[in-house]
Picture: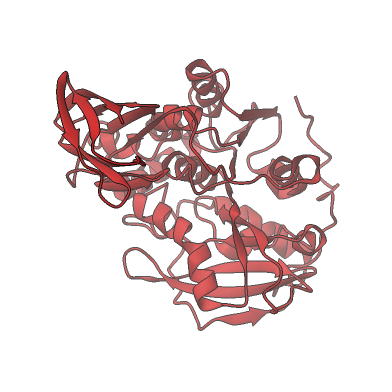
Length: 420
């Protein structure tokens, strides 16, 4: 178990002022503001793309974008101070989701000159929830925005090269929740993920918010999710990494979970939250590439005090982790979304589901459990002729089209055996 550092020691890489605010105290206050009070910050209309003064030795840019709901938002991009626009250097990229009530400027403030020293980019993301702005709590539209940000950067700033094989997601608190949900839903696009003091079960968090903030936070959650856990049970489930533990356990993508026994902002971390998630993942797969760090730090301190903790995980032995180029031999994917593409498999079903559909894939076999008919287009390469498919005991021949085999699974539980 890691021991807390002295509170006055600062980050291991040295602390300098934020891009605009010039006092160290202001930087600390900005970070603390990221964990917020009950009041949500008003939305800020983004200005055109502009360069900011360097963040302690890194280039920094405001990148405006249109969120899933059409509203203007902005993120902050950090690059090495000497990064050249000649297009020859492709940078590893960390997409960093902010805590509840936070903003991209506060998350940018902690990085100092690390992007320059270790040659990587950081995308400090804005947010847009279902009803709230900064209280997105892993809303599906917000998750899609986070995954789209690297493409937005390369469209807006063509001279910036971000390496899609070295794309990482991370975050603190609400941002940690979003990082794990991103990995669960996009395992083929992410090389590694990290959560610091995140919520794993949003419904349990609702009932155990610290008493001093309970009424205000519960009101925010009801507004954002659509009611209490009793009124909107499914809404809380799909915003909880614990719901997608099997996705995480079988994806074969490294992820790290930091949580604290002294966390006062997310109570019951061991019983209900990150500790429970880690136990569940290991029970589902002893081979899951999960790294767990149990600390006694205050909420959010592990990343805020020293971002090198995250970088040591993303770059073990001095080499950046790289995205998998193929799925594991057996993997499970669950979602509620009407369309998803994972490892070259395309899943399509009805919109507005209130139960998860699930597919377990292994060589020559796919098992499906779904509340509505599910179309699965799976990669299929054969020399000539159709594939022999036995769906629920009924044999048929299916011709591939454009390298995909189209299978239609009815509502309920089904198994398809595929033999070339």
